[in-house]
Image (cartoon, rainbow, N blue to C red; front, side, top):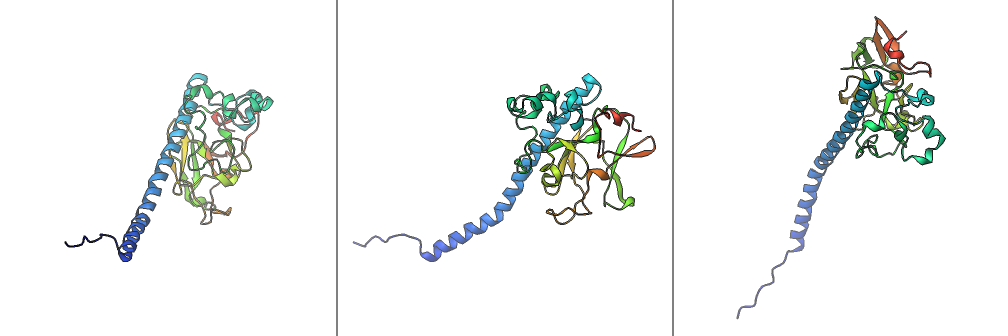
Amino acid sequence: MQRAQRIAFTLIELLVVVAIIALLISILLPALNVAREKGRAAVCLSNLKQLTVAFFTYEKEYNVIPGTFYQGPQNLDWAGRVNVAYQNNPNRYRHPLETSVLFPYLRSIERNRILECPTGRREANTFFDYTVIIRMAGAKTEIPWTMQFPRRPGDANSTERFTAIPMLIEEDARWYNRDYDDGSFAWNDQFSERHTRMCNIGYLDGSAGSFRSPKGPYPDREEPADLKTLQLRLLARGREYEVHYSAANEFGWVNRPR
C-alpha cells in the first residue's frame, strides 16, 4: 500500500503568509485609525451640539445665556466651577456642571461625558474640553453682531469672519486648558486641532460645526502663527471689540458693547 503523505506548510510558505498578513495590516491599520478618529470627532461634535442646544434653550426661557468664570457668586457660571454651591462643598458633586443652571437641560445619559472629547481623554484637564468665550457671558442669541479672526495672525489684511458668533470652543489641551481649568476661553487660550488639525465650535445661533484654526508647524511650541483668544474681534456698531477678558460686572456686556 502506498504510504500516506503528510501535508504541511514549509518554512518558506509560512514566512510568505506572515509577510502578506503584515502587509495587509500595514495597509488597513491607518484606515482603521482614521475611521476610529472620525467616530470620535463625531461624538465630540454631538457633545458640542447638545451643549449648544442647552444654552439656546436656556436663553429662550431667561432671555440670556448663563455666565462664565466671573459670574460664580451669582451661581451663573455655566460650567459650575466657581458657583457658590460647588465652591462650598466640591466633594458633594461628581462634576461642577451639576451646579450649573444648564444641568436640567441635559439628558441624564449625557451628563457625565458631555464635556469630554473622546479623543482628548482628559489627559490635559480635569473637567472641560469645551469652554465659553469669556466675554459672551449673558449674551442674547439674537444679537446682530459678527466676529472675525486673522487667518494669518499678525496680518491685519487676512481677517475672516466666522459663520456665526462663536460661543463654545473645543479648547487646545495644552494652551492653556491644563493651567486654567475654569471653563472659560480667554487671553492666550487656543483652539484645539485634535481632529485632523480641526476642532469643533458651538455658535450662539444654536448651530455647531468644525473649524480649522491657524496654527504654527510645531504643536509643542507657542508660536506667532497660533490663533489666540486675544486676537478675536467682535464687530458691533461699526467698531471692533476685544473678547478675551471680562469682569464680574460685565454680565450681558456683549449685547450692548461699549
